[in-house]
Length: 208
Image 1 (cartoon, one colour):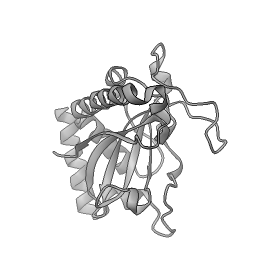
Image 2: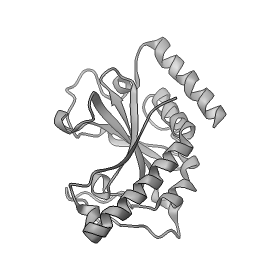
Image 3: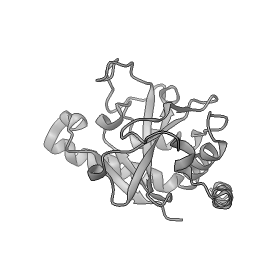
Image 4: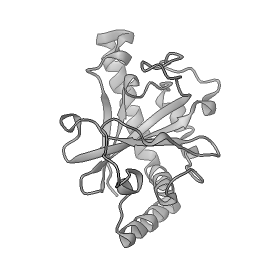
């Protein structure tokens, strides 16, 4: 973690020196920013172990106060062989596209000032993922690595270093997610995964 934190500070310093934060490196300056659209199109996928992220934003009234948008972060389903998921997506998404073999472990929101704000977890219906238990994700979280993915290397390296630096807090956040899920299931049963009123399951500040 110490090496990851050093790397995160190093990359953050480079970003400050260049004067361009992560979001403008992801969202094209020469095109309108479209709510809910994935940036980059088709997501950013590491060629090595298929770690993945995309950036997007909701309608202003659905955002965290002061938020511009957030990165959704995933591990590939391939890493979870033999693990029983808590919930599986259908073969096709509601929009008709094939379901991706991904496991969402968290999202990272960014403010209007271009600075990271908070990590958070979401319910299944937000990302239509293979919803895995916290302990299974914890055993694999260090494998998140965006090295060599397309786009700005600084973005990919920074996100990798951020996840590794916040490894333990992210696991605590995932455990809190599963505690909240268990509480909601007592009332809603298995329908909780599709319940649109249950969206953000846990949140922690991006506090170095």
